Image (cartoon, rainbow, N blue to C red; front, top):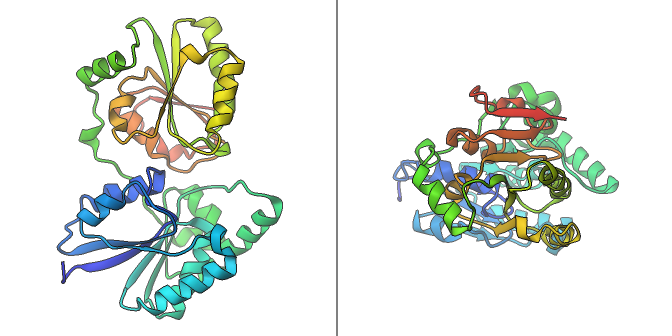
Amino acid sequence: MESALRILHVVDSMSHSEIGTMIMNVYRNLDRSKIQFDFLTCEEGDYNEEIRQLGGLIYHIPSRKEAGIKGYQKALRHFFKGHRFYIIMHSHIDQMSVFPLKAAKRAGIPVRIAHSHSTKSIRTEKRELFKEIAGFIIPIYATDYFACSTEAAEWLFKRKAKQAEIMFNGIELERFCYSHSRREQGRKELNIIDKEFVIGHVGRFTPQKNHDYLIELFVGFRRRIPQSKLILVGDGPLRAQIEAKIKQYHIQDHVILLGVKEDIKKWKQVFDLLVFPSQHESFPLTLLEAQVTGLPIITSDSISKEIDLGAGLIQFIP
């Protein structure tokens, strides 16, 4: 490992998120005798132990919420001052990447990558304006631009969008191929009978993922197909609110909340249909994995059309 090129990734946390999962998909398949990943984070992450086992280093600094913007910038300056040996830093925090990019440039880090993973941010008007300004000045500090879709590049890099390298999120195909035995096992564990139609959703309980609307859709669907179930995989700040809505509609016996699951490939086999009503997305891994499984998908048209593999499995709905 001493001869490996060490690349520093800046993330909020290495959790079971789109960003964390994407990075781990790459990291596991690297020749780590030549290239090694290290991480600068603000929170504990689900993948931390695996990262250490693979030889990666994990550094922690206070988050923007904990320290405020000035405290966060101070922590970044202090960190990069003591870690000038990195040749490449790769920031994954969208508009907020302006801060680690600036600190890295001041410390003399020669290659500074800004990576766009989204197409929109939902914030208060004041914070939205602040983040828009931050996005416009990223090119002052970044040397390279990556994005998971064309729309993501245009959203974050503005006039520099055409210079961005479009790096579609990748997955390990063999892990998600359809398996009848896994489907049968999963449905048995959840007490789902053969004639029940299962709608599935994977995502954090946040406003972006639109669970509130998904519950209303399912209530209407059950009027047509009473023998149906909805499975929600994930967790997040709005979970309690969604649980209350499920009780309000008296559908507790028809909705299964699985929480966060590492073995997501197993649970996607249980679904008959994946519904994804997100208010905005760029290149969600969930939809990529579902297509490899052969799972039909209904998704909002706010998601990049580049996610469609051409297998006839996705329908985009306003």
